Length: 437
Ligand code: CMC
Image 1: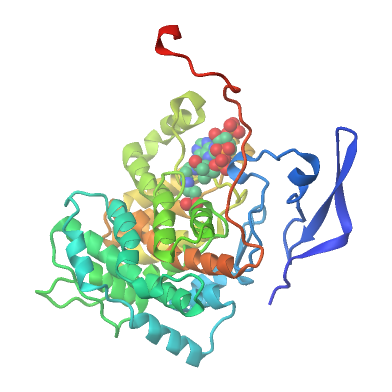
Image 2: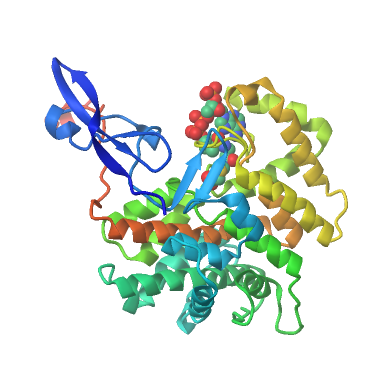
């Protein structure tokens, strides 16, 4: 196991401010940059630091995921994502994220059995769905239904009880595919399909999505493998916006279902999980390879507000390793489905090729991210665009819950409470209406 981060007594940075010197302890992680500990800076110096968007601020210690954005490296508990995506099974990766090590066969079998015992949702949840408009976006339904789980599972809400936390974690991982498939079935007016505990996690999800009671539905092993790979590639990504949202919500002591609902809400945005949906819309809007230069011209014009969706990342300044894995999956899936020369894949690959040799993208180190190819695969598998972010939420639930559990167990954990640089009006007296201009 990686060594825990520690504060070194010897190494400390010094900050000179208004004639005084402040020592800032330097913390070392097991890998990655050194971290200046500024926790006492305000009490000692009276000044805050300013870092909107957390460009240079670590918000916690974590042992779960490591990213080296310059090198394009992503490790879960030390294991490279490419190896997990190539060999792993999704629930094995869930176990790894939750408990810190790869399980042996016995532990994995027990874990799978436990998760499979929690796949059904309370029957009254079915009725809860009826309150949504049929044309609601499935992410809106996810935010609502997952938040509402706290109204159904009162026996796992005590965050100070380790057993409650464990059961809530299993419930979330197990029920998320069921709820996601229900959101889809509801939107197309088909009956809900109950989970099948004899199927593996990805196959069960595909079955709930695409089976109908009137017919037999056989899950393609290639598609199940591709689905599992997509889940693995989205399982965790350290302190991204939605994970930080889950931690922030959890820092107040909110229950896990409410925290995960907050994470889903954050993931929905087009700068985060909503980008996979936006990529496909963008490709459709571009329409043909000939129109790529015209589109890129718009992207490079700052006044247009147009971005190349699926490109760029706050942390990766190199090829996102998840995008590389999905790029090869896209070919496998299309071949299995007998789709030859999928125009959107050709368009995406050409767009990538042109962008990667364009000065604008090279200079800013903008590379394809996880969302660039995932939409093409998902669409070929039969998922409507509106479900793409839902799948991201489903897969990321384990990361959120692992990070939430880690936070609760952290003795240094405090309620998340950023400070601000106030730029508004200083104190002034109330003006009676007659005196206002
Ligand atoms: N298209 C065009 N220009 C871009 C793009 C893009 N996709 N991304 C960044 N830039 C430019 C940006 O205009 C800025 O240029 P300049 O320095 O001249 O002002 C520079 O690159 C740095 O961009 P930034 O917005 O300061 O970078 P950020 O770290 O705040 O944003 C991002 C990261 C992911 C929000 C952004 O790259 C983006 O909007 N990408 C498109 C949306 C997307 O694909 N999101 C999925 C992210 S990966 C999955 C996930 O986390 O959910």
